[in-house]
Length: 175
Image (cartoon, rainbow, N blue to C red):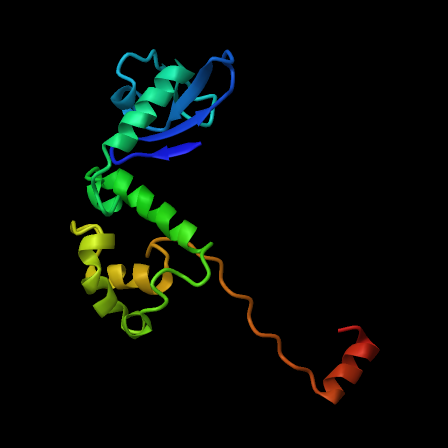
């Protein structure tokens, strides 16, 4: 289970531990300790997550219940003040939005047709207002659902239709 908190990202699984325990994993130093201050955290470059700790299920349940009780915000992304974490979460938000049909805000087509206006209108809600994205890049995010530096597959070029003569020639020559 992925847990995306405003100050930590965790992956919690039952692996390499007792029935009464869970493996809590993190990509960044300090994320596990932020939620589980007394955890014994190990670091290994031989696994997919760099940091991990075995924690009792009861302690994980209590910590998650505490996080749920602390929710007072109306927009999660606005509470993420750590810029690299916010950027990562925005990428996840965009990828998950691709699963939604119709896309988020598709009912606001007049704004969607003007991505610069759309980006400005929703800047405080969805866009990191630091200087990390230019207004053009912000518009790109909301027009396409992708970060500007994201590599996207290029669409296949359109096939050229062959005329009757070209088809006959390809049958004779095999080309």
